[in-house]
Image 1: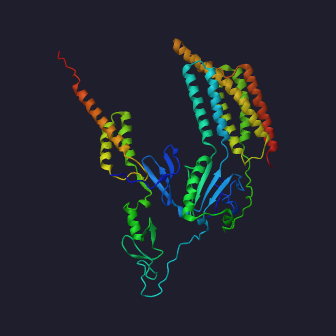
Image 2 (image 1 turned 90 degrees about the vertical axis):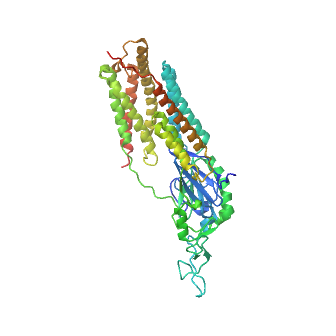
Image 3 (image 1 turned 45 degrees about the vertical axis):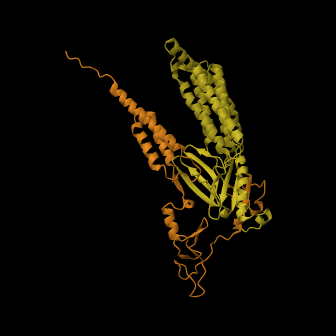
Length: 194
Length: 315
């Protein structure tokens, strides 16, 4: 892939890289290209080495390729092609896949649900219509208890939303109980018989 | 138990959208782009060793937006002094204040830019880096981190990089035949001139109500025609006529707005005094002298514009 102008996608020549004040030849917008040595690298991965002798250790997945490293999880021998390096560990494709499926590889996670925000929404929004809080408050409380230990964002994040959601939910439940109790305490209209 | 320290440090502020925000964080060996959707987060990682380049493209000033906001502030301020109703005054002040906040914040944030991150197989826009000032701060932090992993590339070394052969000269201009939007606008000017004169001659025909719609149509078509002009239409005179027409439209809007709010005030006052409010038929958009001016400039702009459009149109 060539380096192109962000506004018009016209290629920017290497002579203009790492220079201040370069302009796109097509749209004349100022373009600053910060190029790094990775741009000079060949875009092909390392090819697996063939076995030189029969006594050499071969890859578990490719019997004709020389093994270069064992899998950090299962210990299978791996060639260059099968070795997946992740956070200083070497994984085989099977362990890598199972790690992704079971969410054990935090570095490969691409999505997380923010249960604390969901609990806070459930505890606050239904109150606007009052009666939906009958369902919303207990549900929010259930969510707080059920998901308290579930990992939240991979970024720094406190559990203050869980705490607030629990406090709101408890206050709503107390309020609902009070309203129902008050309704029962109201004097009943007497039926006067003629 | 001590809380485990996060491996990420924040690189940029949050670029907010109605549905969430995006933000950039720096990990030990990668850049993390977070897309928050309120109830979930999506993560995209870029290994520092794989980043080939960061391309920052400066964008032109938002002149049209600034003019539109300035016009909104002007209308708000003008309306504040033109009406007597407190409620309507508050509405105008709110409109002007909102416009002022938008304009000041836009100026304060500084010039806009696009920042793309390039790897061997992808080219990703980084939405949180959308202002030049933010970009500088971002580059000051990310560049040393990338160079610590990859080393640095001098401009001389960069110039020797072999890239797929591409023609670096300016691409040929693709001809865009100019549309007929300016012509439609000039015809609308002539129609509105007839309506303006008709509204004065036949006040019972409620032509003033139609005028509100057609004049709004003029404003919309004029704005769209001016925006679409860039790089499409080589004609010049018709756009000069349009820019002059903006002055006429501003004059009309001032008088039309004044008479409308005078009528609206009458309705409010009638409500206060519990008398019969004036009907919509009683509202006269233009008084006679104003109407003559409004019709005259429209006829002049319409005829001149149509003639120029016909003469200037590329054959």
